[in-house]
Length: 223
Image (tube, rainbow, N blue to C red):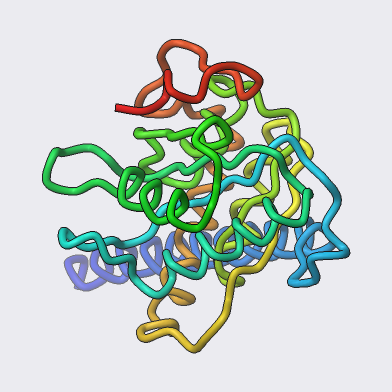
């Protein structure tokens, strides 16, 4: 009898703990989405000018191709650049190994699209959205950025940037239907929760390093 009572107590405590986690995740997600919604748009004219367009990384391929999400982010960034909304583009992504390189793959694409080399900066250590925004501020000296990514991703990116004291707006890069979008939207629930925790505890990026100001020499950020 006592053994059954012991297991009931464990189940009860576990259920309360799980409920608390679910409530916390829901609350954080609501804060992230609601607080950032006014700063996100797919209307180029509605986006204010900024120091730079911040392109967040997505999958690329070894043969130089960009995934649909990555290509659409790059194309949307070119729209910002050509419209004069930004004078600099900062490509932030994963270049943690020699075998996988988001930043240089996108760099080559952007140069082909007519972005001038002196206006293109590379962040090789943008391993997640929090790191990308933090490094945009502390390494590249950006006070205001327009984050370029898909709609599902924008609330988290804008929330992080504004929580870090930056003037951040989001330009939605959706230009088609994406394979696996439902999985990305589901996963975003947990990513937003982690972002809220990172902001509260003042998490540090995996890497920082020497400053490379956006009003300086872009080549310092290249390989």
